[in-house]
Length: 166
Image 1: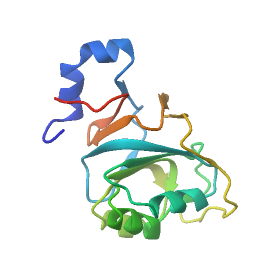
Image 2: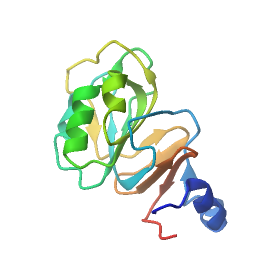
Image 3: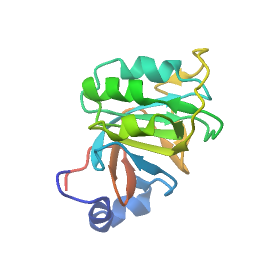
Image 4: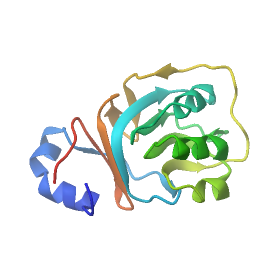
């Protein structure tokens, strides 16, 4: 999707929007990281105030994928920090979308990766290894399935069941 904005994708795909195949996340996310535009196949994760599985997934090779974490919308602690984001960048992840908080914002903003989160918070998450990988999640009013495609830029975030060619 080089040099095509999410707005242009929406304009060109009204039928996919009407059918519900192309979905836009509600505009609730803050933009972090140096890569403001990113896309890739989605890996889903559901956790709550626990970041062990987040770190485990980001230790894997990303191969241009995007990790989408349903953190339950918690604003009580950060489930993503600078070290895992550096690791994600080095392992080839295109981006991370967190329905929750991040911390170490200056470190994250120095990374060449796209990150979206609700807010920043200085407190760290639990380390109990609770959560589920590769399950359907609901984030920002949208059902998201493992293996779907995410497209993000400064206008917003789109989800598609298949890779878009525009």
